[in-house]
Image 1 (tube, rainbow, N blue to C red):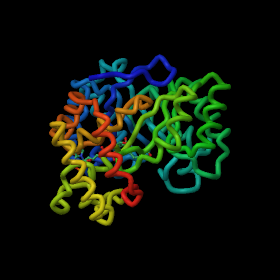
Image 2 (cartoon, protein in one colour):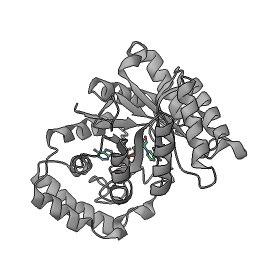
Image 3 (cartoon, rainbow, N blue to C red):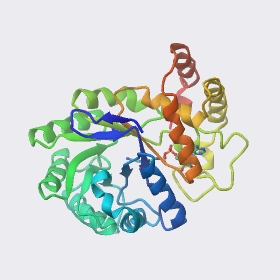
Image 4 (cartoon, rainbow, N blue to C red):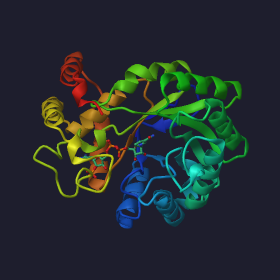
Length: 323
Ligand SMILES: NC(=O)c1ccc[n+]([C@@H]2O[C@H](COP(=O)([O-])OP(=O)(O)OC[C@H]3O[C@@H](n4cnc5c(N)ncnc54)[C@H](OP(=O)(O)O)[C@@H]3O)[C@@H](O)[C@H]2O)c1
């Protein structure tokens, strides 16, 4: 595994981290989930990304991860860097969603209980909710650190203005933002333009989610929608309507460049994100150990020629591809 320094902090993170958004809920086979976590850890992926609402049902990914930890990794807590988040819909009623102090503090307590952890290494505001003042959300994160429930804090998907405000408030409180989490892939490079420089200038690490555009930046949809794929499943986040002819055509063209590099499209898609040295880590998802192992091979070739980069840029230049 390769590690990168996380912004201006003392923390190093693996360039590939494992996300538990899909494939770790009660709808997923527990033995596969266990194999994924243990294989990742054995290969140096010590950073695991959770959120209160990951499942389904919401909360079950944290419960299952906690069980995997207790049964297999309890003596390795100090080798693990575990994240959770709060802000998206979690429990019924007005307090079970959003970025209020009420939701953030209660969510963190619930997440600690579900995972059986004493603290999270990093706890995020999952989303800027447009209603809660950034000051209120950041103070809740700062208080979690002071209460010993989180070692570091992070923000996810904050628009530029609120992103800068969050950094300023956190810096003033001496709880600097460790990580800024944004969606980023060849099919969604917007954060590279809008958010990365602000994060970097403020000393925050950057961690990218959905780097494979949930599977579109692999060869799996080249000949239709396979039965066991995310797009064919119950996830509302990747639907058959997202598998457009334009994205498939672009993926096929990108795949040709990947083949010339002796990589799979998935591996090249991950390497492309890591070619931006402002990025600390990519959070990958995987539905099998085979996918995880294949994606780990990315690390064998992270370099791009100028020609490859400009060919990729040409293929992904049409915003019709973007999520
Ligand atoms: N902050 C936020 O708001 C936010 C939002 C979304 C995600 N996240 C984080 O980011 C993590 C990753 O997101 P993601 O799951 O969308 O990432 P992703 O890496 O873009 O997509 C992962 C999916 O792609 C497919 N895949 C992966 N490797 C493959 C391979 N080698 N060959 C073929 N298919 C492959 C699998 O889907 P199949 O099921 O089709 O096999 C896998 O579940 C999440 O778990 C979560 O921790 C954060």
